[in-house]
Length: 447
Image (tube, rainbow, N blue to C red; front, side, top):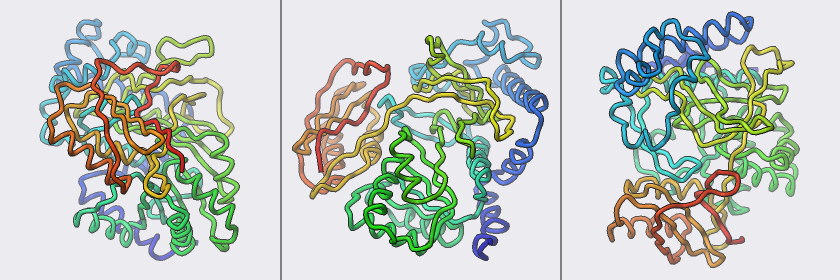
């Protein structure tokens, strides 16, 4: 049964909020909801139509892609096929850094939204999105949650790596999200047993239908719940969605056992967009109306670098973008009946926790808020030693100033809530692990 506040949020407050933000999220969601019932042939035709429209836009409006399309002989992109996409070169992160201005459509410049991300490679990246792309991304999330009976406006709790301090504007936004949109963010930092117990008490009172966040954090909450059964009373969420990290089997099993509800994996990124989500049958479906996914140089098991073409990004298009993850596709149909293609396997790196004063666990994404705001850091790897001190291995575009070093040192000590040494170790390059992936945070500390 829908609660009155959820009904009000779904039909009035959330649509009004998105309209005031200049986003067509609910309109896009309704279109996607209807597309789930299309036959595969009609669905494929719509995706091809979106690809052609994007390529036509790039030929007319985007200097970088105009050159590439002409060089590839794609002078009539309105007649392009999916196979023609492979004629274009791969978009690398270095290209985004060195040619960002030429990747922007000038007519969209005043509508662009700046983002920065550390990403799985530990290389800070600045790029631009727009409200249309944001609306489509949010609509894809709503679409996937509806597969499990969670609808827009339903109560939601996010476990997220937000910074400790909140300014007045952030506090106002959180009050708005809770009391108008039914969304609450709980910090992934400082996970003491007392804080986890408080979180579980809040969940039992707020009774969210959806719990969303880092699997390692939700796993810790689930462990506490299993150790202290009965803390939630008769409350159970309808769905738990894990994102931003690898959802390892033992994490999934513990979370599902503790909360007694389905656990689904979401795969996406700020730069690549919303890419895939598990269906109730447990299979990862690609959001094919938003992204086209290719596998570059697959190995014998079909696993290779994933290349992402975002079909909704017109302000700064990403075509055949090497996102930094590896995976494999499959053509096998899914029993759920969705027309969406499937991602058979995804390989990524599960983040470590940092350990702070008194053995408090701090999600490593919190450190990223500190490091990604220093423009001189081209790449970094943060290693926490057993004594809680840090070695910051960095590839700088220039030597860090004393002020920048102090900014980093103060930020890292603040999130640990203790004074520790921070050693800066400049280098020319940071090699990947055997898997080809980089780890941007590694902790040897133990709580």
